[in-house]
Length: 185
Image (cartoon, rainbow, N blue to C red; front, top):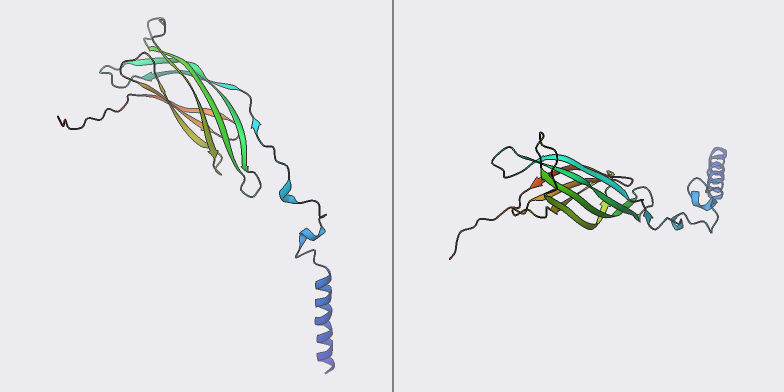
């Protein structure tokens, strides 16, 4: 009986002590009531400075019977604005509003002949909304019409976009696809 009474006393003491000190099971009880961790102020929009990416390349001209190349010289200027969609950990989410302005010259490339006057031009602007995934990088492909060509050739620019940078990943020329269906006259 003495043994049962001492076990009961230990259990009651343990319960009373455990109920009084709840800092282990409830860590928010030690925080002041006016400090809510979810109400932290997060910057709304962060505007990154205007930067330029050079466009200097010699590319194979598609659709040409001969092994011909074109030279591209110019740049793409961009301004990015970072928008926090849900910046609170454990998985913050952001998006970039990206304004691109392309300006380049395209001319036939002949290594033995000095550069001639530009033959064709690439120019244009775009405004894109790019969500940045958890992996940290997104890709955006822009297609620019080469002005002055009769075949409708396009310059494709593929950008790698992160929270801190925009890089030109690849560049290539493409002829538009012409669908050749059956003649139903």
